[in-house]
Length: 488
Ligand code: ADP
Ligand code: MG
Image (cartoon, rainbow, N blue to C red; front, side, top):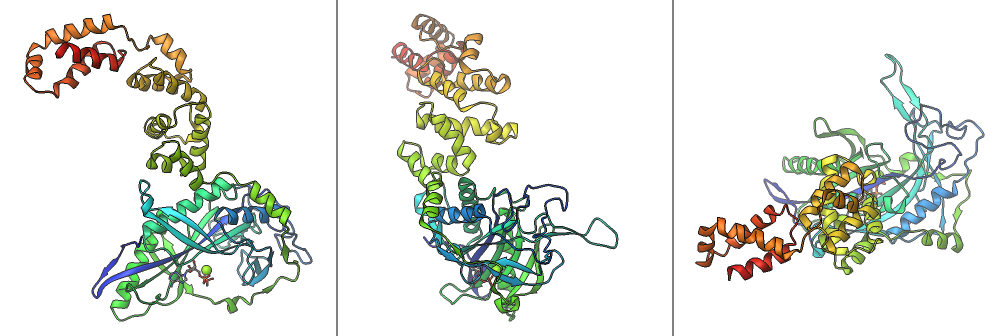
């Protein structure tokens, strides 16, 4: 499927070409080349080893766990894992980089080509787009300058210095802001399933460099700009829209797009020039002489592969085979916590389709109202399963189930106890139901006339009145049957 997103200009329609470089902080207790801790939010400069501070003579030692996480991530996007890779020094001078170079991988990355498939419409398999990943390499993060601590000086916090990042470089395969947004969300979901990055964009553990160019459909690629360090899906989409528009206007006015690095200002929703784009030779890359090449053996790769969980696409397909709708399957697998909760619910032997409808409509609705995530859900999967079973076996009606669920949320009590305590059991007592029906038909003789004269929509009215009279506890199937009999 070709996306038909176009920018309209004076000279016709333009296509947008997008490639994303995502920096994802690796989940590991220690840094890429030192034993210092990586926890977010620590006091400045409390998690800095001599290696991270670049004291002379210190030697980096690769952290096996960081390599393992990057390999697992590569496997999760079906990428080629390079059993031989190597670290290079990328030299540049900046106050937050004590070494004067970043250890990265340019020539021989750990992970080669892979792919990520996204659905542009959750209900529609034919909206699937596969976006190529060029490579994943591992590298060190830099420290952070703080300009707001002192009137005339800048401070530096090296806690992040040396933390392991995966740089996940996409091919220029995306053609619209929506596609880029879907790619970023899917990539984040995969990282969270794998457990290799927490995907927390607000805390900076995942950020994207957004490459954008424009062209007339069918032409060669145009010159791209790269907007650095964009830290939310919404901002990435805004950058693309804004940059594409700016480039089209510029070209149509007779100008040319400069290959440059830009910065996004979310307050003003504009991008501005940061610096002209540097080339690889500006960084004087060379193999890091302090580190041997990485060589991975089959046992290590096997262990990485075995440790992978069921991934979102596989889970979605499995749910669909259980009779769950495409939309529900997609929503339920979009985040690892939701999928985990739902799997726990399924393990209680509930009907998958009924359970999925209930989670997507009732549970999500309640979580939204309460403003909590599923991880903080006040009702456990086991308690939710009890509620669903009470509906499935006819003990309570679907509408009473909503009431019971509200009370479960408030009290934390199990469904069965609430039903007993409040006398909410559904009644199939035909005598009681008949009595109510007779009373309602007698009180609405005019409507009975109209119904018999052909106004069949009134049937719902009679059902509603009977259910209301019985406080929602009548078995709806029996109410339907008895009403039909009496009205025919
Ligand atoms: P660099 O390392 O200099 O940033 P790369 O070749 O690694 O350059 O590409 C970086 C990113 O730019 C990739 O995500 C790639 O998909 C994207 N890209 C390359 N060419 C274009 C283009 N013409 N338009 C948009 N994105 C592009
Ligand atoms: Mg780049």
